[in-house]
Amino acid sequence: MSPITADVTTPQQTSLPPTDAKTRVSDFMKTLQDEICQGLETADGGSTFRQDSWEREEGGGGRSRVIRDGNFLEQGGVNFSEVWGKQLPPSILKQRPEAEGHGFYATGTSMVLHPRNPYDPTVHLNYRYFEAGPVWWFGGGIDLTPYYPFAEDVKQFHQTLKETCDKHHPEYYSVFKPWCDEYFYLKHRQETRGVGGLFFDYQDGTDPLYRGPHADKAAAKYSNQLPPQENRTWEDLFAFVNDCGRAFLTAYLPIVEKRRNTEYEDKQRQFQLYRRGRYVEFNLVYDRGTIFGLQTNGRTESILMSLPPLVRWEYCYDPEPNTPEAELYNTFLKPQDWVNWNA
Image (cartoon, rainbow, N blue to C red; front, top):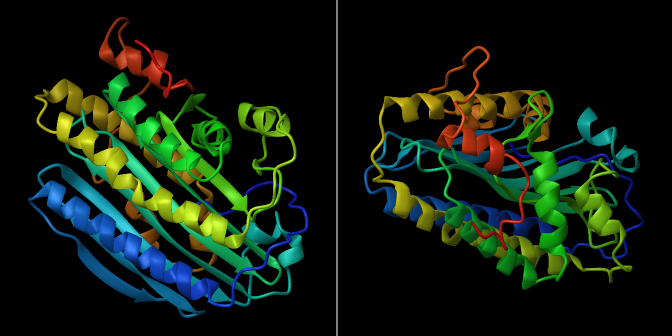
């Protein structure tokens, strides 16, 4: 659930990490996990997180935290991991051959929440850091997957993310928002996973901002038309990731509070379970973090904790016209300018 590779050629880096980079990022990721878990337990008011600490034979380990059967959370996980080793996984070497022959270090915090009420959206977050010899980068993002969405909720979510981006760079949101739309996309369904958010990868301070595989899509086109961007330092990017991580509770919890007590019937519940199937399909078919975790012998239970507790598939489902279910497909599963959205 923690994508950390991308099809990209990166220019020579000009900024080196500080000598205590690994310690500082690791400490932040653990603190972020603590803050998110505390905020969610307070908001849920009915359940608490179970923690399982684990160690990886090749080096490193993590803390997996899962909450179940809460007042609004049917199931959710907030993980911290920190792994290192001598053998880079194929998913990294394929895209960054200059890292070959170096040991690697990777750390991050990742989260997926599956609320019970169909009117509360699923949400995913992941922020991470990677080093291998001369290669280093920050990556991550957050995206929202509603089942019965409200445009004002989606607008508020995106506005919070844009304000966070704008504190650090005037073009971050304009590049990272469409990058999220293109990454969380189910090619075999020809639809986005949800209403997006932010996604960025291989951020090492050098130009260009977009480092993804789709040169013909919106994020690359916007990034490529920008004038040359000034290099950003390791400290600049670390501060950005800090603020992105801490923006989560502000972006998500107001939506939960507005929708958690909305009455629903079995029809809405069944549609929610059906749409959760898309989440499973993406994470098992496309998610690079799942691939990375399995290739590096990570803890399987932690890697797959992003999957929902209950899910269903239906053969050839087609929503009835002029229904809330049809509106999800026709409006919300297509990239939109949510910050400037007017009904």
